[in-house]
Length: 191
Image 1 (cartoon, rainbow, N blue to C red):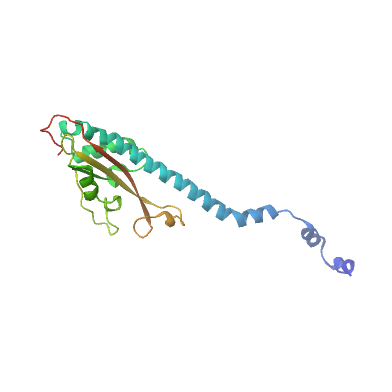
Image 2: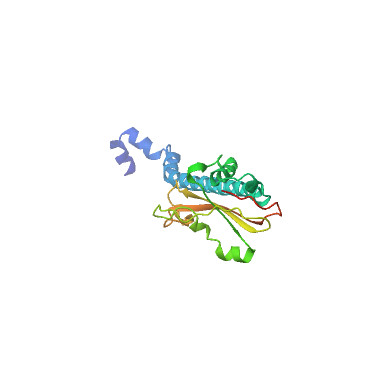
């Protein structure tokens, strides 16, 4: 029966029925989209974590200026202090416009801990209005904290499970330094 039907089928159709050419292309087409999505998510997560590390490194480096009294002696402004953080962080993100810096001293670490806002409350609110900010370097031997935040906007879809801000649309990255100022000469302050 099969030979009888094969007589009426063109030779090209018979060859295509037996051929497996193109099977790899079809399989790749089925797997390509999920593969590239996963690879994109992995790359974005790596870049995001590197950005948070650079923010932390910038905060630690700039906080030394306050801890040693150099910022107070130079009457360093909030913009100058932010520029110190951006010397390191600016290689990864647009630091000058998107980074928010919060500096606050207190008499003891326990009172600093109770008065320090969460990093989610440093920077703009989800509706775009700014949260209250602070820039006060403090005096000698005072406890102080520096928080710098940056809102990461996800590029890849499906990354919203990492979001912690603005209904999961963004992730607020931050750097934090808590320290006690050294006993430098009093009388100078940040402006």
